[in-house]
Length: 111
Image (cartoon, rainbow, N blue to C red; front, side, top):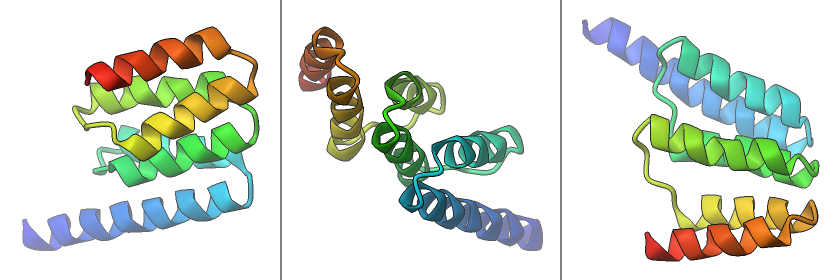
């Protein structure tokens, strides 16, 4: 129904805003948890939502979690973008995972 759809959209937007705010405060675990909980609740999450969670993980040096969100994007059939790809590469680089960073760069370039 329309009110239900409008409510879901509003909740999805709030989720994105929450994830962005948590990411800005470097609360990577909470940002990741909020994004994944929204997905599990059936809310539509966007590349922006997952990108914000990924960025929070990258800033905190949590390269494995940042990269795992690329898989989440694929599972949700969302297209990665240059920002999300760059964030994952940056997280890998900051974590000393240069080989994986280069491999991901080539994978993203193949598109």
